[in-house]
Length: 217
View 1 (cartoon, rainbow, N blue to C red):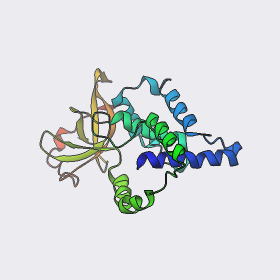
View 2 (view 1 turned 45 degrees about the horizontal axis):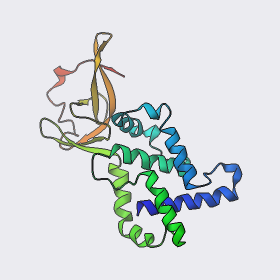
View 3 (view 1 turned 90 degrees about the vertical axis):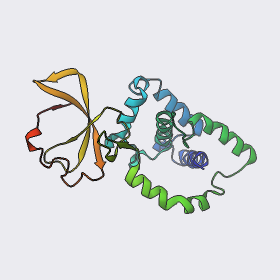
View 4 (view 1 turned 180 degrees about the vertical axis):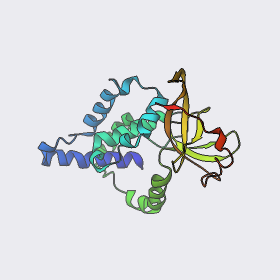
């Protein structure tokens, strides 16, 4: 279904490119695929590890979900990042190269990719929209104290959960091995987290004397 949706998006944009040459739409699916692969062979994306990619695209400013980033190249970029970062697990996101094979098959049959999609979207649309708004690119985790939580996709084992004074959420921080800054332990900010059972102040209750100063990078 996802493959067909992406091919259909490419065909729609191809038509828009012919009708609006001044708007710089992708003229074909192959053009979009080649542009994404080119981006992943150049810095900065070409030099990022899988973990770094997850952190990079977990940043709200880079989540590629705004209306200005719904064009074909950005959509293919999102699919490519998901396929790369979820490659160790069963994944429903197709690789962008496989889309070219599907497009060739559909074109040879003169088949509209949207055939059969509408009923599937109606069945799953509400669930998909709910999941996207609540847990999109988030990762389920459990703490050493056996609390269940939902955190950034880029978090890793051994990351720390912190409560920062004045903040309304718990946060995932990663201790840096490069030492301290101005005498304070140095941590990398990974993102906010929800931890079931400790979001109403329980985590810090009775631990006021444990407040410490750290440096965030």
